[in-house]
Amino acid sequence: MRIVLATSNKGKVREIKELLHDRDVYPYTDLMEEFEIIEDGETFKENALIKARAVYYALGDIDAIVIADDSGISVDALGGEPGIYSARYAGEHATDKDNMNKLIDALKHKGLDASTAHYTAAIAIVTREEESCVHGWMHGDVSIYPRGENGFGYDPIFVPSGYDKTLGELSSEVKVGLSHRSKGLNLARILIDQIKRQRS
Image (cartoon, rainbow, N blue to C red):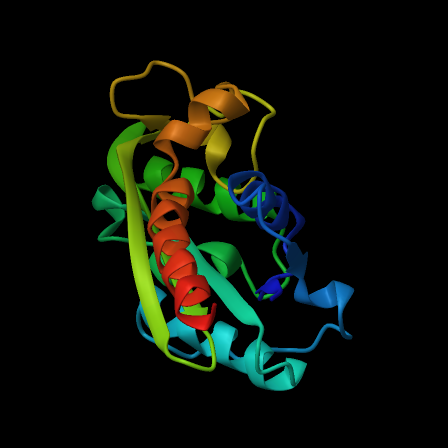
């Protein structure tokens, strides 16, 4: 029973594989050609389910468990932006650095050097038995001053609550205990284990 990730994002693949280290996990691009998935949902949950369904049906393996993550950062001073548009905040083909710089510029435009913010991760699971979705959150602040080279996305400007370092400065071991994605995946593991028990 394969667990297939509905993503080709190398940062997400690495993080999810680390969190599901005792499972057989494959990015879908190891099993088929990468294809475009139109993420036209209005919430993280809707987009995660869109991705998981698309890969599950394209895969043609009814026994597979497909996991999709849709995640992003919401900044209070920006009215919740970039939210579900986090990965393409600066345009359809924007890099992580482009997106981060646009967020920094948006805060500067408001005369701010920081704001409260939170990350959301919606983890969708699609199997022959059911579709489900769980969530994880991480709260903290964003700053206009990037620090650290670890992680990806907005990590160099996000400081988790209770810490004085950005996600870009914190070690992977510390981040695992804080991460919105790890919190969501811990719940997803429970569902995956239930599916395995049902099938055995």
